[in-house]
Length: 101
Length: 115
Length: 84
Image (cartoon, rainbow over all chains, first blue to last red; front, top):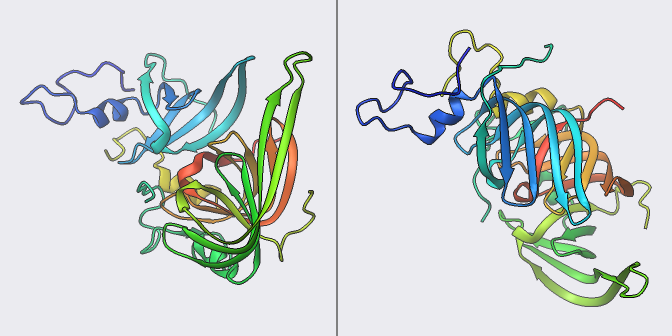
């Protein structure tokens, strides 16, 4: 299990000590992430994978849509989230929950 | 220009994935719509129904004999009721910029459209 | 960026799309509308063609389409249709 804490042990640019953005996303694979889109929409789910455009494969997803009258939520078993709408990804790390395959 | 994405990379040269369909890639459906009546949904609560005369790789389109419908919702200040207004107009020939396109659907193959 | 040993559950976007192709899917677009239908084909832009598609706005069925092309830039997400 990978931890959300990324130290020098991570692959990548150890010499400069830089944490590359996609490394942060990579170590979040298998754990819960919180994804905030450019619009008033957020997702929480387990990150299963991603590509260079930060398209995200999420599992066991909760979608939050914020409207004037409140927050609409819904559950989805899995989805591919279009990276072009993604604003912020927060690794919520810790428990690497797994759903039954 | 569409933002590039490679979600389907490696499937074929154009990155298209197809599931037992005559369509090799999504734009094949648009090609089949050429010279046909289409329903087009655009950003900003706009719709067009007209004949598709042409399109390009960005899905910029030329639509002829188009009827445009613009929907707007207003809230009645006294009753707080939502009022949906639709305005329609005829447009003989229009250019549609591809990035405003949400969907396009051929009317000749449409089944059970509820309008 | 490749999956590491022991991360056999890693699934890249391309794999995911291959898996849901030809099956009932749900697609959400920018304006909040949702499309449910059979996923016919798609490309790297997330342009999508669905058949037998129902359009839902605010949970309400608004329209049905035989075939429909959805332009990828307006797609927020695509996934297998949840069991009802």
